[in-house]
Amino acid sequence: MSAFASPDPRPTGARDPPRRGAAFPRRLQQTHVFSGASEPVTRTTSARTLPGASARPTARHSTAIWPAALLLLGLGACNPKQATAPTPPVPEVGFVTVTPQAIPYLRDLPGRVAPMRIAEVRSRVSGLVVKRLFEQGSQVKEGDILYKIDPAPYEVELASAEAALARQEAALVLARQQADRLEQLLTRATASQAQYDAAFAGKKQAEAEVAGAKATRDRAQLNLGWTDVRAPITGRIGRALLTEGTLIEPGSTGALATIQQLDPIYVDITQSVGELNRLRRDLASGELARLEENTANVHLIMDDGSLYPLAGRLLFSDVTADPSTGQVTLRVQFPNPHDELFPGMYVRARIKQGIDSDAIAVPQQAIQRTDDGRAEVWLVRADDTVMRQPVEVGPVVGQNWLIRDGLKAGERVIVDGVQKITVGAKVKPVDQTPVHGEAGPRHDADETADKPADKAETASQAAPQAAAQHR
Image 1 (cartoon, rainbow, N blue to C red):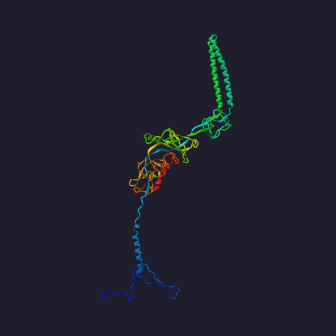
Image 2: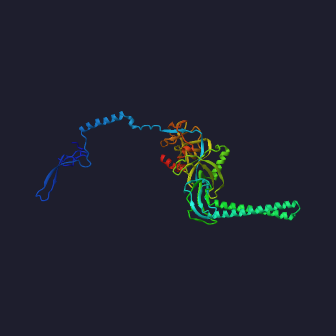
Image 3: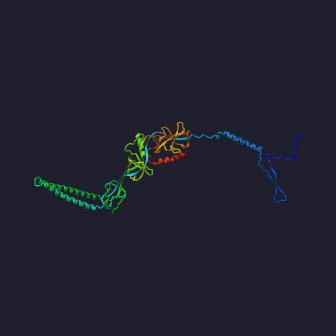
């Protein structure tokens, strides 16, 4: 030992404490003292690794870990594409090319059915109703007898008038003979002029009394004829308002029944004054073409959404506006051979008021709505990228929206796949423009009247929600 070495202070035979990470002995002696035992009892248990001590891997374990690590590295090197995300495909969208076309200007307006002619059956004479000669709700012709009033009093009046007439005619014969006789005596100077004048005046008076008697007789004949209450017009008669045995008093103005002419029939529709004036200005400026005269330009949509099979013709528009609503009444005439239209019915009239010869229309699904409710469409640029375009829409014409402003001929409007695109995105456009002769957009009211007239308003209200769902 060196002289400078310090002596070990530990006693001889003492062992070094175990180092951190060193394994403890596998067997430890643990002494457990049991109550009731006269001397301690010891029990040997297995030792476990204490907290903080780590087991050092053996050479056998290291030999098994290296091949597994090399295998994982080899698999990662063989499939490098799994580390990068795949490129998304270009979305495919359907579009239609904007093409100006002649589209009729249609408006859906509310209306009421009104009879062409209506007549209340009334009695011109008083008396007792003795018979009713019509079936309620049936079709009657002009001149048909509807009611029979007791004619006996009027027959007596006619007989009395005829007797008075005969008496006056006899007096007239006598007056004429007297006047002729005095005229001859006057020429012979055997009668005075005064006598002749009196005879001549008596003859004229007798003629006047005969005329009055004839008028009285004719009135009696009229009253007798009016005991047969006849239909004043041809049409459908309603229910009977009086029955047999009812006494019609003099001066009574009550109606016995009502007859309405239903074929043809009128439909009175209303339109705002502002819209009507704007239509007239468009017609005057040439923006809308006028329809031919005497053309059937109005169609009816029934309350169940079905189309009335026969078209009507606009007759005229009223010259007075309703002060409470600011609307003008337009009268339309419709044929009604099967009595499908009844007076008082509420209908919707689809009226064709002009033709826009270069109108632009797009399918309804092409119109999107912004958060503030404004209309817009998606366009495909020349480089196949997409953009938004605000538009001003008009009414719904058939299955299309009429575009007033915002689109030009030749532009490509997206109608399918809007939910898959964003502004400026690259797309794969697919042309879905209907070919001439194929089933394309329908504009005629004959073909589109099965759609309710308020569908335009419903679509405009639901469009913002649909746009929000797509976004």
